[in-house]
Amino acid sequence: MTERTRIQLAVFALIRTIFNTAYRMMYPFLGVFARALGVDLVHMGWALSLRSLVGGALAPFLSIIPSRRGHRAGMLFGLLMFTASAVLVLLWPTYPVLVLSIVLGTLGKYIFDPAMQAYLGERVPYERRGLALATTEMGWSFSFIFGIPLMGFLLARGGWLAPFPALALLGVGTLLALLWLLPASKVRTPRETFWGGFRSVLTSSTAISGLMVGFLASGANEVVNLVFGVWLEDSFALKITALGGAAAVIGLSELGGEGLTALLADRLGKKNAVRLGLLSNALAAALLPILGRSIPGALVGLFFFYITFEFTLVASIPMMTELLPDARATLMAFNITALSLGRAAGAPIGTFSYAYGIGISVTCAILLNGLALLALQYVREAGTSRYNHNV
Image (cartoon, rainbow, N blue to C red; front, side):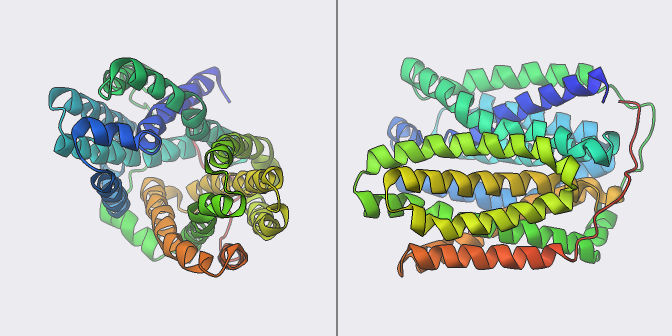
């Protein structure tokens, strides 16, 4: 891996930290934005639901930009859209414009992420791609560990608008950095056609199987994700203490899962790593009711559950980048949709099953992981990748 590639990975991780900070800050500070704009939490909840619905539905169609213009253009356009979304709120600080900003920022993220993953898929050998993509995925945990506290500091000092100038400036700065780091390639890589990429994905059994793995694993995680707070509250009647500790556990487990992927995915093989992650996540789910007899035990169980899910998810990304090399950007966009639909499917399963106890909820999570393992058997893992040495 060249020095230039290492610099690119660091910048990609920074950009994804910025994207994910904007994406995740709505959850802990939802009440702050609602009060400042004079709306209730229900209206803010609708905004987040619209974000998920529009983002998940449009993700495959957004791949038209990297498909036709190249991965570099896709990344630049996604970052430009994100920056514009932050500027919009500064110009018109109203609830409708904030909703529009939330949606546009998410669409920018959903353009950037698949384009970046496809870009690295073209340039980093498959044998090293687990490390490369796990490095960029650290932007997810870094947003929780560093980004959210920074946004909280800005909100406390400058009011509800304070995060947006910072996000806009970071967007402009990283956009300029990308223009310098990603010069127009002298080696032209094959460009997938938009509808050709769709056709390739929808007619490939191995691509569909890979998407099903993400859909089912994401659903299994959401079953527990949706009810763990209620479970802790019901079990210990210590809502603030327990949920505060759980939030810290989740942040650390995300970083741990990404680190484990960087360490193990290339050594084990991506498919083997995903298999190990699914098995471990099912075991972690089974242990939750046993460990959850005390607050420390419950937090240990949640740490194990979330670190194994993060490992599974991050290990699946490099695997997916090589299933359809000629339609990478399109497949990675479909992968975003599959993960979103998995969360959407897991949510009602979680709430319905919890009415019968946490044991039923974790049983559902185990079954979904089992189905993901079955789908994984039909994924044909690539061997040696085709990639561009001129990074």
